[in-house]
Amino acid sequence: MNDEEPRRPDAPGPATPAAAVAASEPTVEAPPASEPTAHGGEVLPGWYRTAAAISWRFLAIVAAAGAVVYALVHLRVVVLPIIVALLVSTLLLPVVRWLKAHGAPDALAAAGSMLGAFLLIAAIGTAVAPSIGDQFGELRPRAEDGVRQASDVLADPPFNLSESEIRQTVDKGIKRLRENGGPLASGVKTGAVILGEIITGLLITVLLTFFLLKDGERMWGYFLSLTGRRSRRDADEIGTRVYAALAGYVRGIALVGLVDAVLIGLALLVIGVPLVVPIMVITFFAAFVPLIGAFVAGLVAVLIALVSGGLVDAALVLGAIILVQQIEGHVLYPLLMGRTVHLHPAVIVVALAAGGVLGGIVGVFLAVPTAGIISVVIEYARERPAPESPLLEG
Image 1: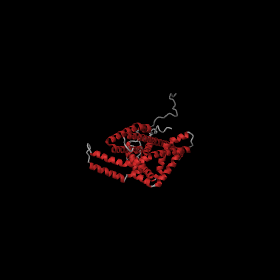
Image 2: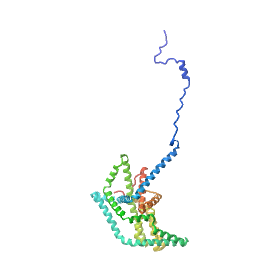
Image 3: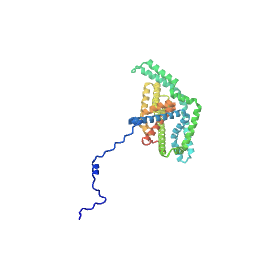
């Protein structure tokens, strides 16, 4: 009887000599496939391709910005009233909201706020126009006399500068200012000569202001409906932030200029400096031109004080202006402006220079708000908080 168990069908059989030899031989790997040869930009290093991509995108942005600026400058008759109407609407919007809250229709609220603003400006102008008209005629010659007197002070000890050279330089500078006011004055002359542009601009500004106050939300909703669904939320958020920044800036800077004008006017009255009202007007409008405006207004006040009362009055006026500027920078700006538009002084100077070259005095006034709008858009792209201002409530 055989004791060996029968082999199952699925069990492996004994290895044959050929299979054993094949298993003992080492496995030969297939040679790796050759990589394709790099062509074109693939042979360039990564940093070079990155720099090239950034460069052409930067050039595209600069070209687009240049085209926009070119169009704005050559279409100023249409563009400028739109900007002015937008800024004016930010001032009158709280009044319109108050009238609507008390039951006034949209059209009546918009027309009533504009009529009230016009009557207020007309009343102020009627009250101060006679005195301002006479005093403004004296302002320029007195300021020129102040410049000459300041040159005399520099010629005396302890400065001991050359009196003839100083006088020659001052006279030459005054002569150039009289003959050619530069790009700023040329912008005013062009706007004053072309009466048709002024009338057209005023009509467009008035009508646009009315419709912005009456149908602003519906107009914005229609504009958003033209955008795609994916970009609609971003467009709405950017527009809201830009308008909030503009509203806070315009209202805040107007109040800052008013407070500065009142404080400096009181100081001039106490010291006994003449031409108080024109200096207050210059101080108010100078607030809309940060840094440079305050310097020019303060310089005019000091020169008038130097002519009328000598070095002591000029020093007192200078001290009063420095005190007011400290109050403005540490109290008024944080309180009234909040975080609406925050720009570095270097950015402000560059924006003012570009605005003066491109648009004259109007460009100077609009330079900082434009730079603020760009800053708001960049901050949104960087996911910064929205601008806040205590003046935007209500």
